[in-house]
Image 1 (spheres, rainbow, N blue to C red):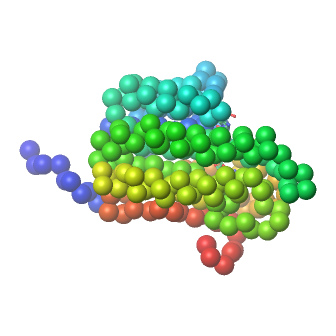
Image 2: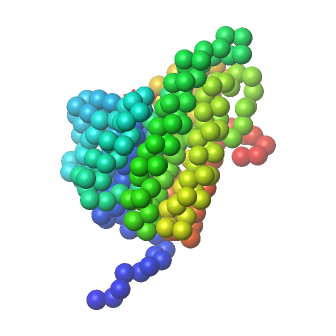
Image 3: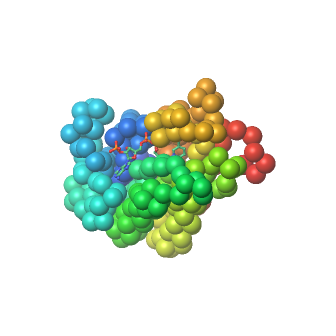
Length: 247
Ligand SMILES: NC(=O)c1ccc[n+]([C@@H]2O[C@H](COP(=O)([O-])OP(=O)(O)OC[C@H]3O[C@@H](n4cnc5c(N)ncnc54)[C@H](OP(=O)(O)O)[C@@H]3O)[C@@H](O)[C@H]2O)c1
């Protein structure tokens, strides 16, 4: 039998195990559906396991696990359960996120703390716990769902605490890139503009609904990123809905 190609043009799908946070609805559900259709084995971390299981209705190759980003111990339990269920881990999609609004005139530190916990600390924790297994994979992948709000503060209507948290997630992504590089782990901060989900319902300054990204379009990008070989590292992928000078 011919030896497996150590550096294939694209990575195979079969047998690879991908963990996704926040797969209950919105973008996370679209990513789960897309990756399941691709043929990956999935471990989904969600707050409401029963509701998500029945809503997604994915047959086989998928386990559901409780994950609450506001619970400090939840990331470890989720990642440990995912590895125990499938014997390995090849990819981690940090998708769960929240957007709360406040301004300099009306600051809200509770909202800031919540966004820091969900959008930054939870991805940090899942990465810390998953890194040994991702390194063992030899082609581990991390995709952090950031935002164009990770790249700039577009104008004064930009949601202040959210842009702060997404900038931090971008920094975490670049730091994780160094942490796993020698063992084949590749990290992407995927930075979409407005996606047509509940997250931005009624958000001032958001791209008009007709011009928003569909969740399935962003899920397509995740599907591509997971297939790229170690030599094709994409540290940032910006997917804008509007014309801006730099991306
Ligand atoms: N929509 C956009 O315009 C846009 C643009 C760029 C980036 N993003 C990012 O894309 C990601 C997905 O957002 P979305 O648009 O799909 O929003 P969404 O429809 O509001 O979904 C948010 C997801 O995050 C989960 N989540 C929230 N708090 C959680 C917690 N404490 N623990 C575990 N899961 C939690 C939700 O689970 P529950 O069902 O349990 O609440 C849900 O699955 C986020 O990181 C967001 O920042 C969104």
